[in-house]
Amino acid sequence: MTAQKIDGNALSQKLRADVTTRTATLKAKGITPGLAVVLVGENPASQVYVRNKVKACQDSGLHSVLDKHPDTLSEVALLARIDALNHDASIHGILVQLPLPPHIDSQKVIEAISPAKDVDGFHIASAGALMTGMPGFWPCTPYGCMKMLESIGYNLKGKHAVVIGRSNIVGKPMALMLLQKNATVTICHSATPDLKAMTLQADVIVAAVGKRNVLTADMVKPGAVVIDVGMNRNEEGKLCGDVDFVGVEKVAGYITPVPGGVGPMTITMLLVNTLEAAERV
Ligand code: GUN
Image (cartoon, rainbow, N blue to C red):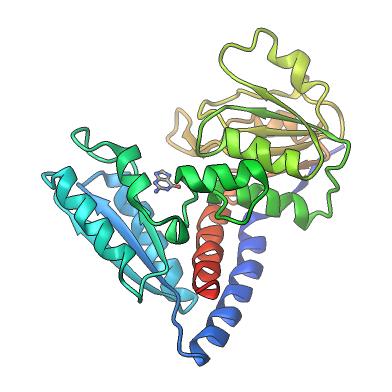
């Protein structure tokens, strides 16, 4: 058996076409959805990410501003900038690119963003909304994973989902989203004694650790759905995920590739969240 690939590029294209249409409808009513991407410092990876986010907005007709600051920016000045963006009617979503320089308290900055504009879904109010099933913004990466499961018509009710990784950005919100769709959810992490014993029971596995080959073929139940959130480099410098793709695709029913899987979905869900922030105004 060879797993069917879930193509994140194709799904993104479809969802972004819908964003473009809805954005045009909103613009006709005089509202242009706007995203502010705040970047502090010169982190090369962050520079690429923010450029891609700004370009994706432009491609779908959203307004976007890149709010760039030197890494000498003080925490007080950054908080003042966030406050200004909170009050800027042309901005519906605010994203502060992480990591921030060490002299700035990231959590304090995130909590300064108005929850109504928290399109990254990192604010404590957004986390609380997800936990309690209230309306709010879902973090983009796990939200994208849910859209991928939806795209194959997968019904999570009564299924066992195993999430590997417990980060605030992916693992924990992922588990809550799967739970909300009535899966039985297990969260595994670095202190889990027998990961294989857990993953072998799983109908759905989400690998979100940031380490190559965390999931190998012998750890996967035949036919399981495998979602790979990892973004790593192999010895040749090629992009790869957390899953041993070559081995696991022979056992799984569905699998997301890296690149071309979860990666493009993250920015797509950022566009969706920004559009929805504008639609809620
Ligand atoms: N840094 C790495 N990934 C992300 C993300 O999804 N959002 C933000 N704000 N910063 C990041």
